[in-house]
Image (cartoon, rainbow, N blue to C red; front, top):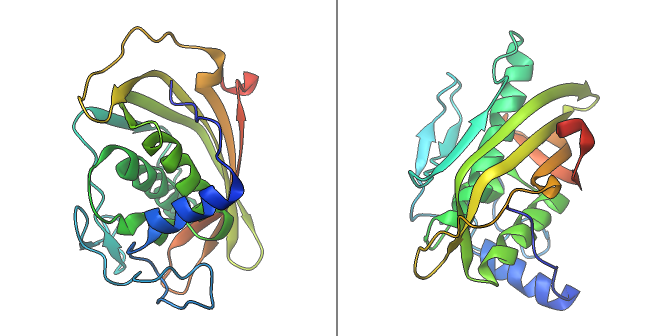
Length: 219
């Protein structure tokens, strides 16, 4: 029930992404020569503010606040391997940062660029704008499961996981009315394959994302 709408033309998408990300706080400073460094990136405020990590590291992280009616359930968050757990935690924060940008009315979303970069940042903004273009949001419970971490060379890792969005419902962005008549469908089961890279601060930023809707392995 959280499937995306049709993507707009490339030029319109580029403008929308720039509009959404302007002012988002991130791990790099602003530089117009670098497409990953959005103007105003270090001046974020609004619904999020820097906070110490709950995992015991000394990284200053943007706080992410989701509405009380948005419940993301992450299964298998603790593997017993601290290195893998750190990757899963930043994967979780990235997902929450996207949902915050969809469901929370704020001027800036610093966590969005903090946990995503490159192609993954663009795809996240594209996904968010697909909701905004139709003035819609969502409510309900989303389950993330079968999460697996694989380490690669050069401080890179991949995280694969399944998503079950059968218990989420469309929400009107203006009235707040929830449409609970929408029925669950196979497209609510999505398989994700993501690549993450560890930056100089020690944050696992997602760099690329691929997804498969109606994924049989997730049903």
